[in-house]
Length: 148
Image (cartoon, rainbow, N blue to C red; front, side):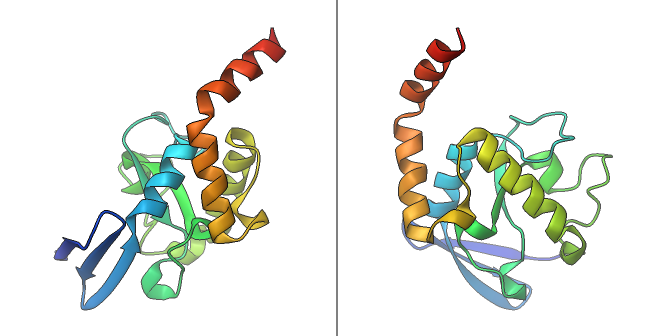
């Protein structure tokens, strides 16, 4: 069994040591992304609003970036392969899932927040996500007015 040690450096960054490598992750960015999307991006998920986690599409130890362009929001069940919907070896065979995860990610970003992380720089995208989160209730009220 792998041992993973997590050290909280500050509110924005965490240091993870696992399997002989160290990674500093931007906890603030992951939390902002997860809060803005607010659901599991797997279209076959049976519990899309269960405890959400941020998954790196391309693992950091394989050269993936710790930025929004590489994040996807998944529920605990989908992220840890606890379901029977075919998400086997999501971490071990990540290269087989890259294209599918990117499709799910962009579909949900367009559907939920109206723009994708591919359209902006990392910093600009984070600002847009924070703005979306702050004004979410106002946006939903306007959307309901239009739909009624």
